[in-house]
Image (cartoon, rainbow, N blue to C red; front, side, top):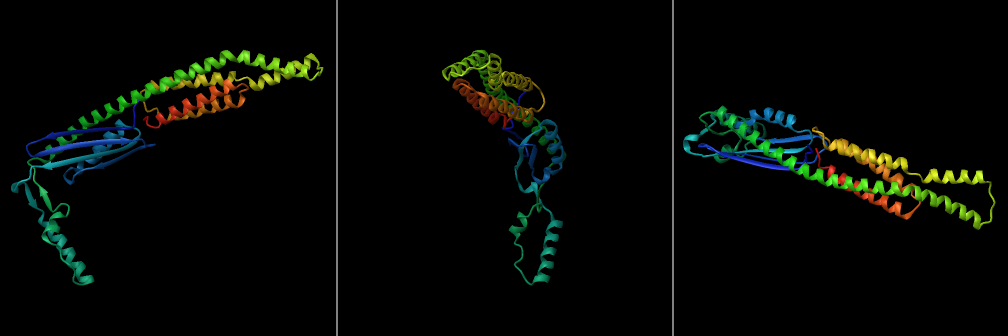
Length: 287
């Protein structure tokens, strides 16, 4: 199954005490690079979330954001008195070193992470709900990657079909091209009124034919195309292998272009390079 590295998913669930929402997005990246943002009361989930990402994905820069909007009331908030005392003691110590400074206001203390804490009837239950919601979001996220990957797969297959057509066309024309080149060499020698030993003439014709013979390049192009098709049907991550195969296809197209002795074959080689570059651009988004 071909997967894209570009995807987005969002899931939200409403509870009596508030609303949880996960948002996942990813772009292409050479390796797996997760960025996880969690509210303080959900920090314990980070190792589990990171492990789930590592087992489900292999490549891509992935951003995972969890938001928790509590239904706040007076009974649901309490002051972390120990933390407030520690902050005030730290401020006093700093003042003793650098002299009197502006003290914290009550509003500034309330904004300090962890000073205001939301009470929950069951913090573990809320974390379990958040983890379950994350797994559902991941299912949507992976489904998005697979759908976009399937679209990329079809675009690549269309270009592979066109490459097969070009290779077959050049292969069919090759005997005629070589025969024409041999005849052109013979005609030029006649025009110059140069008498050559038939064996020598045949030898020169063979040398010219060898330089212009692209049958080997055509065979390798077909082989690489078949390998790309096989790779597209694999279940594991295939992006790096496809990128390597694009390099090999491009190498053969360059050789075909350099060996070309007729304008039509040159144009065919140029079209091959365009098709390969189009595939390469699409493959940059494949996991």
